[in-house]
Length: 312
Image (cartoon, rainbow, N blue to C red; front, side, top):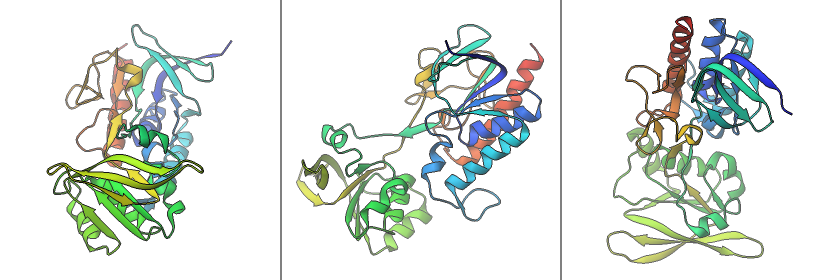
C-alpha cells in the first residue's frame, strides 16, 4: 500500500507557475507540497536561450528552472519527483493519486500542469518519432550536424526552432500553411536574414518518408494548400513546431475548459469553478504563454489559495 501525505496546498506541475506558487505559499507558512510531473521544469527545460526573463539578458532555460526549484526548496516547499495520475475535486479535502502509489490529500490545489507540444497526427510522423521526427530542436538538433532538416509551423516556436537548428544543420526549410508568419517581428527578421533558411509558403506536410532498417527520415511530402501540387523535400530530420496543447487531462471532466482545453478561471484571478482549486500558467493562458506571465499567475494562485484557506 502507498503512503498518504496531507498538505494545506498541493501544487501540481513544476514550470514557472508551479515553482513561483511554491515560493509564495511556502513564505505564507502553508507548507506546500509540489509534485513535479513527467517533465520537471516544464517547457523551459527544452528551451535553450531565454532572452526575455527580467533581470537576465541571457539565461539558459534549464538553468533558470534549476534556480527556481532551488528557490522554492529554500523557502521550505516540499518538492517531490512524482506524477499525478488522478485527481478527485468532488469534495474537500481534495485527493490526488500519484504514479508512485502515494495519495496526496489537500485543502487547496494549484494546477500548474502547463502545455505540451502538438503533433500533426500523421501515421508516418508517429512511426518516425525519435528516429528523425522531433518536437524539440534543442533536445535533438545536435544529431543533425551538417544535415538538411525541415521545420513545420509559423509561430514563435517554429521560427525559434529553425534559427536554433542553423547551429547544426547545413540547410533548414520551414514549411508554413499560410503566406506569412505569426512570430514576433524581431524573430522573423533574424530568420529571413539567415542564409541557411528557406521557406515554403502556403503548404502542409502530408507524409514523412524514410528507410525501414535502420528506421530514419529521408524526406517529407509537401502539398500546396492553394494549388494541390505535391513535392518532396529531402531531409534527415523533421521538426514539428505547430504550437502547444494545455495539459488538462486530469480535470477535463471536472472543470470548465475553453479554447481547446484551457482551464477557465475567473477574470483577474486564478480561481476555477471549484472553490479551493486554482489554475495558473500555460494551463489557463492561451494568449500570452510566457514564462514571466506564468510566474506572475503562480504568485496570484498562491495568494488566492492563502486567502481561501484563511476564510475556511
